[in-house]
Length: 205
Image (cartoon, rainbow, N blue to C red):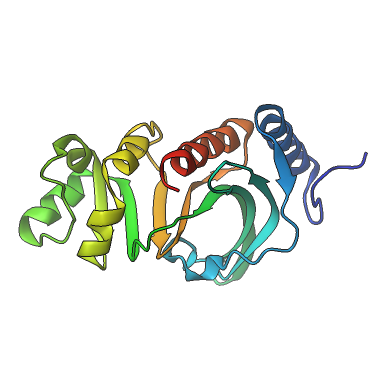
């Protein structure tokens, strides 16, 4: 069987998972292959603990003002066992968009109890006084307060507030945003990521 994605190195179970995710994405969105685009994933902190990060396949979703992308990413991880070192691959789904405004560097994830306790001692998080619900729900780290305040406006926060997954992370490096988590590729996850990035592109041109 000919698959519309790269099957190199995938076992049969992984091929089925990729195929199901691809079919789900294709059934709900008009997608096109991106070809050889370098998304520069090495600039993101969320991938720093991997020894290698590679985009296996990527698809563009066309929007009126901006395009968004869904990436099937292969991450190589080094495992330290009892007296030996092994390497494994994790296959994940991430969504990416290029934003008009420069956000600086931003990390957004669900806030934990540990975050709240640490914040009492060392307040480093960006909070929004006018949006307590958002600030109580999400942990936001930034390197440029002014850029972050301008970029994370009410429309942006509303899209993020619609996320129901607990273990996702959003990272922005200047004009490039990614969202994802470490869960394996699946139809449910690829649709979830595609819907989020499409909503974001609709309000953040």
